[in-house]
Length: 193
Image (cartoon, rainbow, N blue to C red):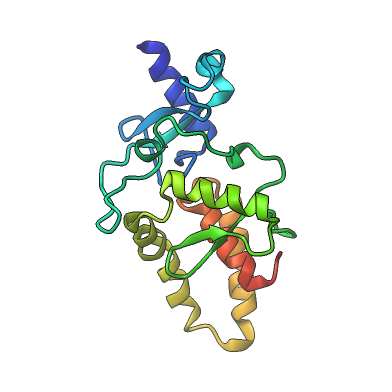
């Protein structure tokens, strides 16, 4: 049991206190260890540290779909491990993400992906239920709406500077909940593709 607790602490620290899937803030009390490739699919990987991630313990069912999200929804399904993909993060010069982020908190496959990659991104979103109503509300209410509201008082000729500063601030803060969602959303506003 002690090894699991220590592994969870290390994973949470490596992930900067964010769920590997939805990027909700997590700690040792509200997180569990998830096998990216389920034990049922590959027993050899069941003890491989590189196959483990810390994820939130979703306890709330979506009022529309009746589904949970992250580990509770994934169960033993296989996903494309986008979280481990090289060069998949948003940077100051490129939006390498496979996803698009919208002001209502929705995440979708990024337009203009190949059909195969687009289908994998959609599958990743659907299996983890990343458009769970609670996640969408948190992404907007807890973070994005405040930024949008703050931008309304910025003169039009300075809006690009405002969004660039927000982007740089979030880019540096690896503990920012919903970090990739925000970076993808703002990158689109800045024309970073």
